[in-house]
Length: 168
Length: 401
Image 1 (tube, rainbow over the protein chains, first blue to last red):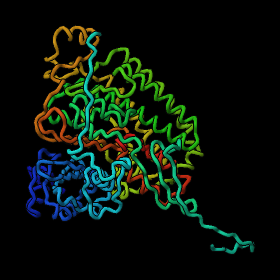
Image 2 (image 1 turned 90 degrees about the vertical axis):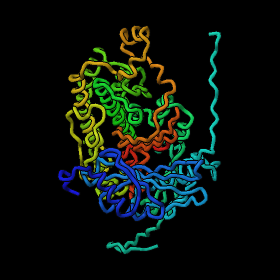
Image 3 (image 1 turned 30 degrees about the horizontal axis):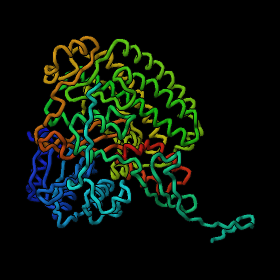
Image 4 (image 1 turned 120 degrees about the vertical axis):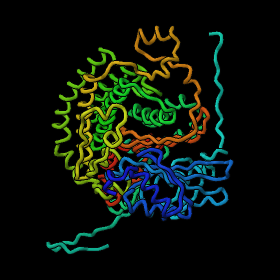
């Protein structure tokens, strides 16, 4: 990991190759600093533990995305490192899917504490239940949003029309 | 409950007091937030941050707005740090669009960002001052900030929520009058920083309130995912401007102040030293800024000649080309990050090829400080709660978005 000059490929693509080899995930390095891997949710804990071991020490964001046509959610963890200098430039997106029928997802809190806020917000906004999160409560929204998940695409916003005064 | 015999023979009854206390949301020291404190005596056992009082659903609203219409919206969470909120969003958008930005615009982005950083740090220090009962610092913080806000107004046309950065460049050019304002402001602020050290930073009262208070160790800062000056005050050398330079930062000479102590005082010192570094950068920018256009040719060519003559040649202002009205970026996604005044600001845009983003994710520095604040307050004395809060420079609207 330390001798990056000898290998022509970037550190990130090497990490992704290793993940593909070890855990049979799919993924790609889009540049030297950005890349993604798609992981089945049953393997996400293993993949996360491995990433933590090689130096990815914090999660920058947890994003939930709703895909109604596919009846599923995508959960994206953007992970990076503060302590390993070569990895500080890298942001790796760890993507995983969970279906509408089974909106349960393993929490990565035991591996990265920094997911605390993000998982809680994703639970509140999309209704994905992160199993193992120590305090999975609603966070930002009012009481009337109990059971309503506004970031799902089925939650429609009304937009006011644009009025132009022609006489002016 | 327990009686401890005193050497004098007198007995002191220590009665443990346990209970919960609501700090806020209407408390002047909590911002737009309620801090639910569980106390044992005057030791904080746990706190629960009841955030969301200023939640404005920016991420949801982004689903029904065009990319251009989102510029003023994404600035709203942190109006006093609007340039950075704006810049981070545009960087992500430019990645999807694949636009090159001219050199002069890059310098102007850095210039506006650094001016904004100084203004934001002064604001944060002012708030910390008033939390600690030091009202002079509050007045000075807001007074000095005014100088920089006036420059932003001259440069961008607005004091806050400037909407200065647009895809492909910036909206207005630097004029000699603004350069002169900046030079005066630099001289003023350098003089004033000395006074700040005398009356606030080196004040024994302030030091005793901040030193060894809210200590965040290096390991904890990494584990909890702290950002910005708070992270650097815990001995982590991490600044996006150095790690992944954007705008003109790769060409500027500056240092990243890092402290090992990790206490509230170290966080204050980091902010003050960053103000000096920002001023160094501003000096370099106004000296070295290259000539040239401030908008990418790809968009500049689309502005009608009559409008160019009136606005660009006369006043050095960009009028929006028609392309901006409702462009459709290609399918794809982009992650951008900038070092905002309070720390790393991350944007994640997923585009499905329509004029509106499929998903826009904003991770602001204060959002990431929610967990840090919660952890840091545990075990502290109740009287130190405000010192910890102020020293983190936590800004509720930015966290709530």
